[in-house]
Image (cartoon, rainbow, N blue to C red):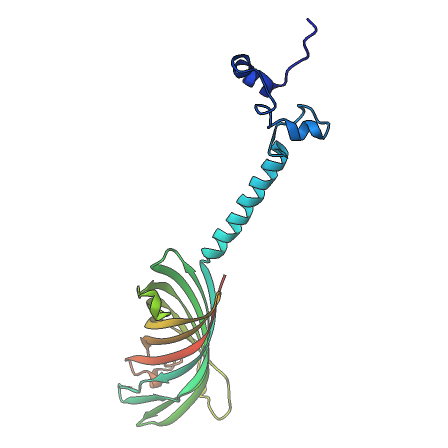
Length: 251
């Protein structure tokens, strides 16, 4: 009777206060709140209420999460200028020669872990295919679209070298699309897609925290195009060397 209601934390500390009666030293945790006229409405420690402590902990966890996400950048995009140098082929009485040219590659890479990444690449070039046979000379100018996807394996190196080498293996298609150029066309030439295997290697050289330079070599192995014309079919496998250099952005 007549005893004021106790807050939950007072009930928890009641047995201790019975053993050692409360003194100013024992109740320092209450003093700051009481000094502000809050009594025992809020649990305090060093002048901080539980609400403030919770807000501080949540803010710290949020900032740590952002920092961890920044350190674990898994995605990257790249833009590279390329060369396109194709080997001559001969077969079935026809010799095919391609003009050397240049183009570009755009790629997206997702790092599955420290060692392996998945990659998708689109490339564009334009060149002319020259065909020599007993029936005469033919020339077809075409846009070449490259679409490949596969895996990249990072090669471990000491940090002091500041370089990230890798090797790659991918599959996809090359699409040869005649431009219709009057000086580089053959009647009946059609758009043609051929399967391609791409292999290669490269290295990234960091510039900034999320930016790097990339130097790369890709080799493309595929059936020589004939644009759907039997007279231009060499029935051979050809090879294109595609060196490139460009920029990479990690995010």
